[in-house]
Image (cartoon, rainbow, N blue to C red):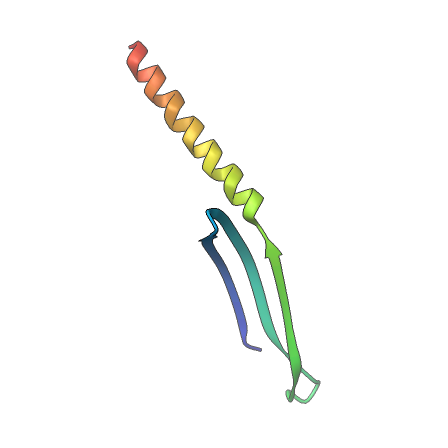
Length: 68
C-alpha cells in the first residue's frame, strides 16, 4: 500500500501557515485499488509555539551569558 506523509509551511498575506498531511491508497482484499484516504491537519499554532519557545530560549541563553 503506497503512503505519503508530508509537512508543508508557507507564508501568505504575512501569516505563517503549516499543514501535516497523510495519504494512502485503499485496497480491497484482492489488492485492487478502490480509493484513497487523505488526512490533513492544520499545525500552524503548534509551529508558531515552537518558534516562540526557540526564540525565548535564545534570549535566555544570551541573557545568562551576559551575566557571567
